[in-house]
Image (cartoon, rainbow, N blue to C red):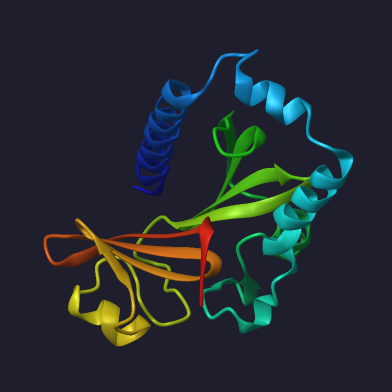
Length: 199
């Protein structure tokens, strides 16, 4: 049964990755466009400023962020160093990868029992950029799990959230917690890196 769930989860992730990539490909500009010329003419001073801005999510005080995940007694925040986290968890059950749309190189997926971590190279360091709860055996720190009634979401996480069709979205800093709902029950729990800062 677990292997079936793992296969379904991997297939679902691949669909999302390919959909996101094809969406980004349509927006991409060809080489040699004015945008490329502007970027290449950027001064070294501007590049330094941009580097500092890119690093900002990593320097947030994560202890102030209530949207962390806990697994086997290890607290995990989005953008934590993957090696530091996984050295405490042991080896994943399986690993697979796909070309990344949002980060340099590959999206690497490490599947553990009931949870999947997405890992990306962020400025030379492998970081956890998304955490997906894979089945109903895993509870997030607020006590919510897949299969819970929809009414329990605000009970566990509060009333301050954004909504999208079939989705409750909680954001703090650069962490986005998405709770999917189907037929009145929690169907999906995903933590992800978000460029839109809140909290």
